[in-house]
Image (cartoon, rainbow, N blue to C red; front, side, top):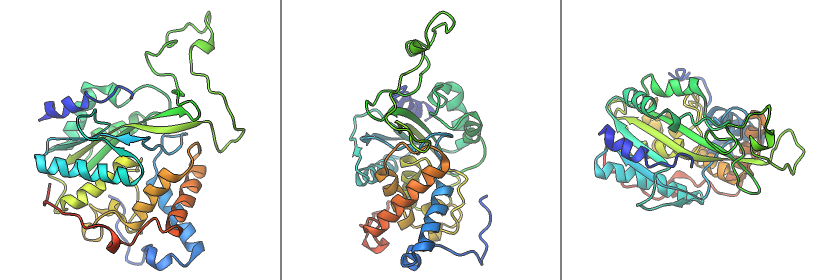
Length: 324
């Protein structure tokens, strides 16, 4: 089964717990705070700061144009359900959800021992995870966390800074032309990409961060009694955005609470949907954690005020074929 997963993995382009809930803690529910502008602002900022996990020093990355979702080590019915749910949500966000045959940019893998699976995948193809370009991944410390521990779902993203105007790669990639230039005799102009700046700001820059690869491993023995519909929404959330695995969202209604309180995380909540819609609506180029948080918080508020986050009862029903 591992070889089947790697067949999909190798098809990818080379580039291209939480603290226990305290009973007295307030739970931020959209319906209760929507009329309190100040409190909503603060809650949105807190949610973004907990959930968002861009690469250090980079802006929040998102998929550009479209995604191709693949699944391995599941029954055909379960795998197709996961692929369809992630693809459908991608389309709701304005992306193309490519139909097969296509090269997977998002790969969802089932495993009886996710840590062993992750460790073997990284050991066999480390460059699929740590590519070597600046600002493309969370680094070796985070990769070690991906390879170890007991998590029902673990994920790894690779992103790429691109020139906002031309779409050219904004960082030097290993093996790219100029990578072996002798900087004593050669020119730095042959060594790294040249980006023409059109702004003079410490909060914004002329690069946009684009997701290029997402790998998710589901430990089927640790998913407990969660339904396939719940799991699919959780996977969709963590593949379409750079989500912090250590995010503390117990004060919010969020699918990210699935494995701590599955009964209260039946699917993507209004918070989750507004976060994703805000992420794909905000103008790229914000750098620095505070600037990213402020931009995403404002986008979430606009999503609420524009009515972009419908009540759960207005969402289309989802047919759940059962547990994974």
